[in-house]
Length: 224
Ligand SMILES: *Cc1c(COP(=O)(O)O)cnc(C)c1O
Image 1 (cartoon, rainbow, N blue to C red):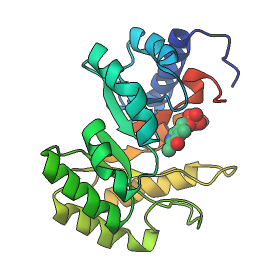
Image 2 (image 1 turned 90 degrees about the vertical axis):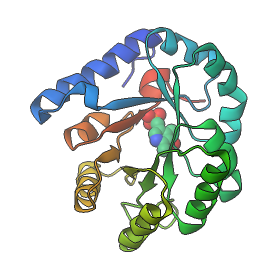
Image 3 (image 1 turned 180 degrees about the horizontal axis):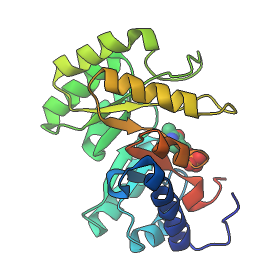
């Protein structure tokens, strides 16, 4: 995908057009899919052209990096929405709740406890996606498939707003079966939110029901 010669606004239009194109056969509405522009590693100067082009939802994977970049941008553009898409350490839960509007990597009981405490303390309920280790990869974050029913039960009991399920399929394998499995798990548990699909596979994810796609390099170019 070499669209590096395009302006950020043109890349955004291209990604949105690609989403609209697959919505048609999937009988879905583009408005039902939230495009999260993943701006990790990119400075504010690279982000502002996308804001100027109308993008409002952004994703970061590190609390510290987001703390350095986003307060100024949010002050300048009060209608922005910021999502935390990366793994979260429990000791950063309060900072994450303070800064983000949505968290995509809730995957273990210790983090659930920390987030529930932080949300109560700050009186700020932040919707969370439960990340599922969909490919059963030992090195990857995410709740194990076998633990998912009990963990979802615990999240519901905590009162934390449950947005849905999130996954990052194994690299270098066709992702569609994993997206399909995540969609089935969500349906089985009465959940509608599905955070799945990145630059290389967001169209496939939309075909299979993604409600949130997390797209970085297709919008910003390759990361250093
Ligand atoms: C970096 C990242 C993305 C975006 O990846 P691209 O391939 O650049 O689109 C999506 N999701 C997560 C969890 C990420 O860390």
